Length: 330
Image (cartoon, rainbow, N blue to C red):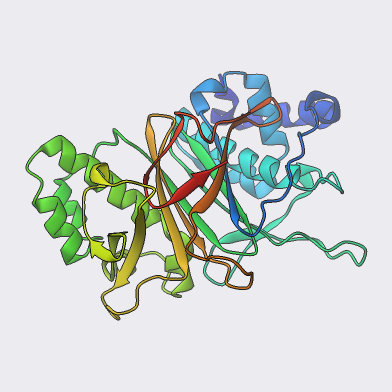
């Protein structure tokens, strides 16, 4: 399956075939209403469930030449496949929200903002005002996810719960974690519990892409070490293991070592157990331009999908379990 990505001749021959058959091959996307200003949408696909080489070829055809080349340069079947699914998921997800204009996912163009984060490069049209969509993508070889909001930035990360670390966990954590976070990890005697706490913290760290890039620092070890992830229960700030938290009563906050008094009051964070096999972190900026309680739980809708084939809404089921932060699934 998918062997054509290893050989450029077959790669190009498959593309020629698709250009003739694309319009008839892929069905229309089921349209979805835009998230409200209080909502976050999350879409994910499990690569192991996408077994059809024909479908993978169809996904390839909707990508730009640059995206195709980027996938072609990757080494290994799994890396190529997850990268392809990531790009196809982004295009399909954004296109399905255009309920009034039926945008072809192949026609979407992208650019990077000043912090290096991809965003849609909407084509100028005097007769149409593009939706203020924000999105972020994250993927492993076994799960690909795309988060979507309206008007406010979003950052996500997904990590395998059983991801193995080649080096000693504490030695690795010293490069990215704050002193307080290192103390927490060092206090855990059980190696497996320590490993799970490390993966959770790492997922939250990387998931704060929107927050880190908003600082204007980009991604490196330095920004990661300058903030500490805490959990706030009721009115007290207390650093705890996520297993011990009541997700309805807890709030994930970030404290900057540069300014300890400045907690990230303008951001919402959530940590999820996703599909029983991954942790997913979501970081969303609060929208202070609308009325209502900005400290309300994050309203979250989640879909498991195979783009153009099937969509299953899984929020509120055992496939999506909030284990950190205050989350309301719908």
